[in-house]
Image (tube, rainbow, N blue to C red; front, side, top):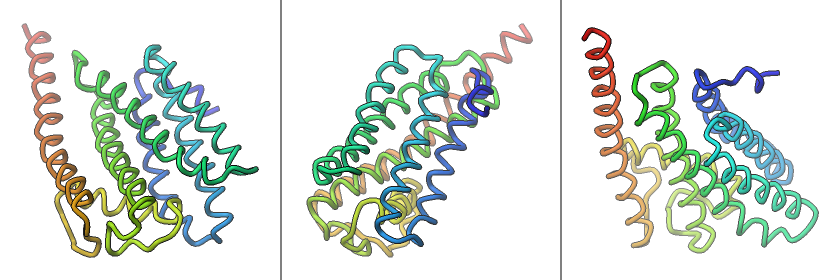
Length: 224
């Protein structure tokens, strides 16, 4: 079983692969019909969250928190499948955001406060970047639930159908590319967009400098 092979030396590699698979699946899912899309994509998100949870089981503090969030998430998924869809839809997005935020905090502890730089830590820095983009994508999707025209270029439809477009816009904003095919049209959307751009710039500076300084310090101790 793949999950049984996850340990503290490779956990962030598996987590990064799960997040990457989620992004790829979000681009493929819109080819399906709306009903199938919604159920299958949420099921794929549940799998991704489960892999994230299992990868972070070594950090007991965050594991318990993320486990609680995941259990509530799965309960809402089942509830939305068999009824109370509107309530389920309104809660799943913020819960997913909360789960990713907790995952980000747990990974940051392992990546930024480690006493050496390994392949696992380097891949973990990629996972942190992916989580930043995903959290902002969820923020855009949540905003679109209340203001459907906040982002021009993203049609008014279910959040699962818009996930790929929101993730695309989030990552081009995070990397400050700004192609201009999707634009914020309301003040609150504009604030969220420029805050993400600022975060993207500072992320690169903080994480890269942290990894480099850790590597230099470790080399100094090894050679000294």
